[in-house]
Image 1 (cartoon, rainbow, N blue to C red):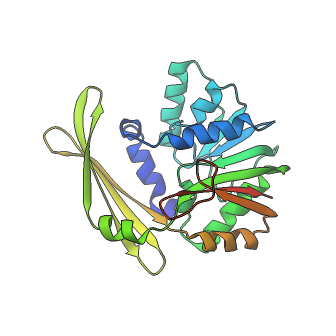
Image 2: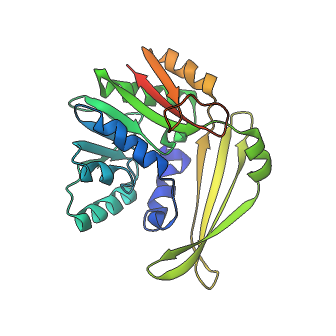
Length: 249
């Protein structure tokens, strides 16, 4: 995963990451799941704390790991400003271990898609399941491959204004298949200042995963059972629904 540039991308974007608008429905969902849990929670891919800090504010005993030290540094700054005491460390979702298992392990915001190979996917799933108690579980989400969305948006550029420290910047984002056969998508994000000069530019890669493909992965790692819903707790009906997986070891 590190060799595919994910660390460089998030380390570079960490100072500007929170300036962009991000979805909020997943925050409420994961908070509810954590509140229903009688025990500790581990967030894998905690980033700058978009969800993790809300867990702490709610009094939940939560630990966070992330591959990017830059993102964790930003999380610690935000926690200090809010008077919170985070328990976070740098770790790779494929190889991390825990001293004591958690009742709930969450992997929000499609972080699992950064595993680009079958070997990485299987290794990550085994590590996630090993980190939970026998009666606990892993919850993660990602999008379903959407042919219409791909046809309309891949290969095009999308720009949006952002405000950073009172100054207006512009973010350009484009994505396209790097390897269509393998489902590898390469994205690029560029931040321009008010003079249209490039402030930062980085690329990232993700691996699209279909519903049936993921079910096969779960069978291969020996998951005992799983449920599939959207963030409303209902069964997904089409590819516009986010796929939310609740997996039991």
